[in-house]
Every structure is written in structure tokens, then in C-alpha cells.
Image 1: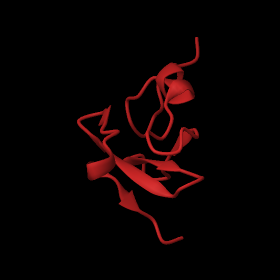
Image 2: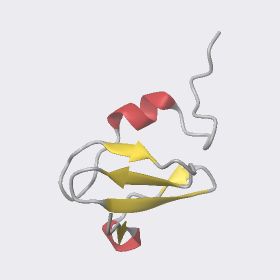
Image 3: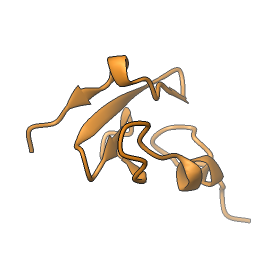
Length: 65
């Protein structure tokens, strides 16, 4: 049976499928390092702490790339 959790961060794939950026309401994607979620639209990066995504605008950083 395949795992329903992402290997890099213990976040259920079901949760990743429904999470959206609180600013622009676009889907977020797990970073390559697995330590944050990035919005492809507005480039905000939300940290993941203790396997919990912190989806607060004040906690986000804007990625230059």
C-alpha cells in the first residue's frame, strides 16, 4: 500500500491537495527541501514547523525567484 504522506515532511497528500495560499487562493507546493510550502502565483513561502504548515501571511516570506 503506498504511503499517503510526503516523505520529506510528514504532511498527508490529501492535505497538500486542498491547501491554498491565503492571499491569492492558488495551490501551494512543497519545496524541494520539504521545509516549506510555496505559492506559484504570488511566490509566498510558508514555513513548515514540526510537520505543521504555518499558513499565516505574517509568517510567509516572498521568494525572489
